[in-house]
Length: 156
Image (cartoon, rainbow, N blue to C red; front, side, top):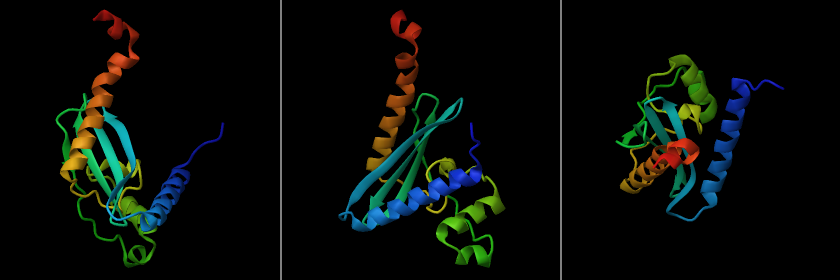
């Protein structure tokens, strides 16, 4: 089996993001969802990262919930200054990777483990994104134990 490196994963993320940027330019005005990624962050926390096109511009929204996908709250990026002038002159993706390497994890958005991280910043979600994300988290993580555990499903 071959080993997958962080650099390989980053290359896939960058390629996906660049393709989404191309798609965004050709889509009609309005909102269009490109992906919704559901994650269990740790034992007590879940997350959804929604990547969407808003009027030809890519945006990401992040919502976190408890272990059962409830108590959903938005997460918005903290502003980060460029790690260096050279990083700020690089492509946005290269600059993002440089900033992440320079600053480390600040406990902010988790989407640097999904999608592309920063950029883009995780924007304050619209009410519709909160409703959608909350529904996805609750449906996925509240029902996962029942759907995947045959003993629990037959006990009721």
